[in-house]
Amino acid sequence: MHTVLSHGIVDLRNSIQRNERSLRVLQEVRAAMASTLGSGPHDMSQARHDLVDEVEFLKATLSEVNAEVLDLRTALYSIAPTLEQGHHDPREQRDQAQARLNDQQEELRDLASRLTAQTEKATELGRRVQEADQALEVMIAEVNDARDYTAHSARLVAGKEGVVKLALQNKSLVVAEMSDLRRSLEAERENSEKARQDRDRALPTAAELQEQLRVAQDRIAQLEAQPLRGQDSEARAKDSRVRNKILRSQTETFQGDALQKLGALESRVQGYESLDQRHREDLVQLEKLLREKQASHDLEEKLQAFQESERTSARALLHANEHFQDAVPSFWDWVAQHLQVSGAAGVAPLIE
Image 1 (tube, rainbow, N blue to C red):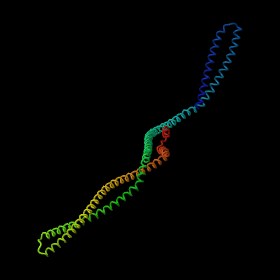
Image 2: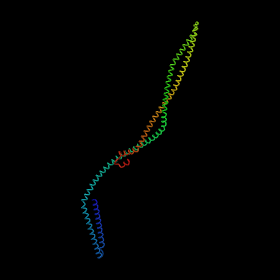
Image 3: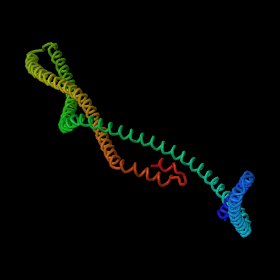
């Protein structure tokens, strides 16, 4: 409708311009007639004839123009209701467009608020992603440290394996030597105890022998000191002297044997005491060796525990190395699945 109205207005303006041109032509004709009426009869007749022709042409032209103007007016009258309806329709369209515009503005404000919220979520997500990157860097550093520690531990274990093998090889020898030393020590303790018992039994016997010898010597001295009385007395004295000599000889022999046995017994006891002292020294050395063996055993247990810990660390490191490449994509898949922001075009590249 607006297009039809525009075309009608343009046609009306063109008709007005043609009428103005016709008026200007009439004015020029009048001016030409005024300038040409003063000439001779022939010229005037010719000019009048030309003027009549020109006037006829102008009339015909003016009639055509008037007809066109009339047609345009008729067309304008016919489209006036349509124009009024067109005025109402654009107003309704404008109201509808304004309502749609208001709805769109409200939707835009809603989208702006949602975009603000999503932007905040995206910022928070970016912070979480940065924290995740930092945590991932820390994990990578810990894995590298674990690898270095495992390699260092492996070198230490390789260095200590020789000591452990040597200790294990000497373990049976040390145990056998300890068993022999214990048996020897027990035997020597039994012998020493027997020697002490023999000495304890021999000391009272030697004291009794010495006491008997002293009594016999006193008796001999008393007999020798008694005066002789008659022939019988001389015979008895002689017999007593013989018995005393025999008794003194036996006493000296017994005393010598007793002293010899006592000396041998004391020598044996001293030998046992010196042997016991040596065994005590051996026992001290054995206890020292036992302490060293216990320390070696503790070291062996610690080393075994250390090796077990290293094997556990190595298995954990191997497990971490096997699943590390799968864990990182899974982590980012989880982030993309649970923390993805919708409605914001700049968030998806951040997640990707």
